[in-house]
Amino acid sequence: MIKFLDLYKINQLHKKDLQDAFERVLESGWYIMGSELRNFEEKFCQYTGAKYTIGVANGLDALVLIIRAYKEMGIFKDGDEIIVPSNTYIASILAISANNLNPILVEPILETYNLDYRLIESRITEKTVAILPVHLYGQLCDMDKICEIGVKYGLKVIEDCAQSHGAKSPKGCSAGNFGDAAGFSFYPGKNLGALGDAGAITTNDANLAETISALLNYGSRVKYENIYKGVNSRLDELQASLLSVKLASLDNETELRRKVANRYLEEINNQKIILPIVDFQESHVWHLFVIRTENRTDLQQYLTNAGIQTVIHYPIPPHKQKAYEELNDLSLPISEKIHQEVISLPISQVMSDQEVSRVIEVVNNY
Ligand SMILES: *Cc1c(COP(=O)(O)O)cnc(C)c1O
Image 1 (tube, rainbow, N blue to C red):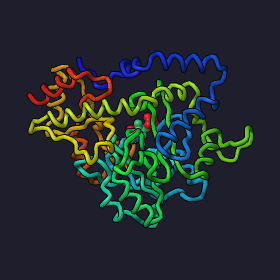
Image 2 (cartoon, rainbow, N blue to C red):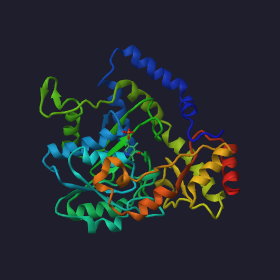
Image 3 (cartoon, helix red, strand yellow):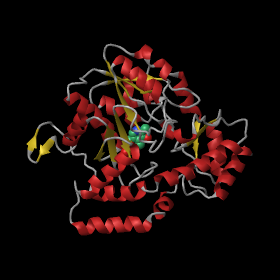
Image 4 (tube, rainbow, N blue to C red):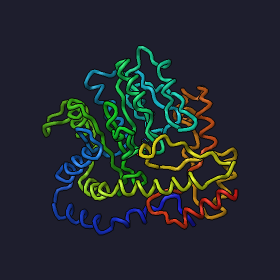
């Protein structure tokens, strides 16, 4: 069987270095807020080009804490609005509602699956405080256009980079360094994955970085002095040490993912399949290879029968979820179409040429 994602194989690539890192942390006797975290944060600053990286417990917390910090800083307040793509993974929207702000769902561009910047301005009201673009499936949004709108209306731009580690614009700017702040996830299945939960925030804003650092540690800068009603969302030493190991090979592994994607793009030629559109090679890091087809259930069953595992990202749009009953009546036809038609093919840095050939052959014979 061709697995959708083989995490075992992915981590076996780094077995020796991961074991060394584990040994180092075990022997150090220091497990929270130490040199491994500082080292990873520094490396991630170099990687993204951002001035500050703050490790946190997971990707959702990264987004929640950015918005929470802007509230503590007096920049956002309850009831304010944040513009977010309507076809994103639910976490981007949860981060807004968790802070008592309102998500304003804006449709994506059908061909790229990313937030349609042309629709943003008409949705801005007196309550709008931010735009939260999501580089979905690993492809950068049109950040020049989105940041331009942000500046024009005085809105914060908060990037959701959970799927886009290392994606670069033609000018060489990296995901996480376009807007005012960005949230990353290092969930095991993400392009940079820990061996458990982990996440990070990047920003160039010293005040924001300082506020977040306190919030994630019980709202405290000095031990036992609490300036905010904070949370515990720390990135531990062990995960930080493992992430440093994997960050060193991330760009090479992204190249391998790109090779798989480019073969799919060149060799899949079935009229029933709509392939994803790429603007610029380096702007896509192929977290997922998402195609569309009219009868997705049928295609998925056919691929399963042929021994090819697929996943749907995502089957139910956020505004149709029970958790968001207040949004259930919205009509978002592009998102609804996407959620009905998408299916993700296997892609990773450990797929063999034969496996890729097999997927192409089976898809073309559908
Ligand atoms: C994975 C993901 C998150 C949340 O990350 P976790 O580490 O699982 O909390 C947020 N946004 C998007 C787009 C994601 O794919």
